[in-house]
Length: 110
Ligand code: FES
Image 1 (cartoon, rainbow, N blue to C red):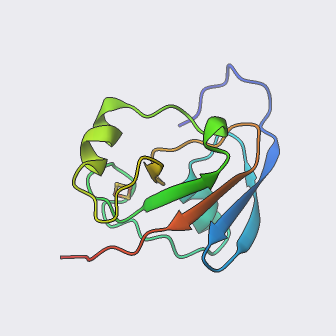
Image 2: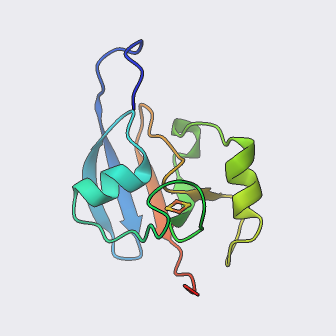
Image 3: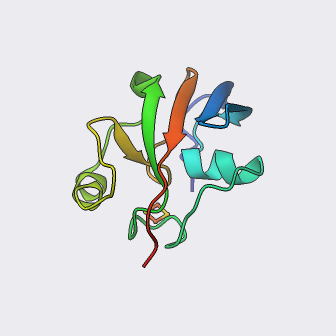
């Protein structure tokens, strides 16, 4: 669900490493939504509900264009394989007005 208080969404570039796929995404979408809309296979075991860590990505560029982390995302990421200070959950990070590059983190699904 998106708020109607912002101006119309704009297109931004979203790059997925290590494959180097570049997609045109809409500001206001999550990284996960943008990935799935463009055929990028970003895992999402809990359906985007911040209840797993399979959508874990590391932000390589453009972190300033993503929504700030909420407490629930920080807590969830604490247990993630391959955590780094630039880790985000793709289902929680909302794209803003600039280009972003992320690396998909492979995680063990148990
Ligand atoms: S899809 Fe489960 S936390 Fe993002």
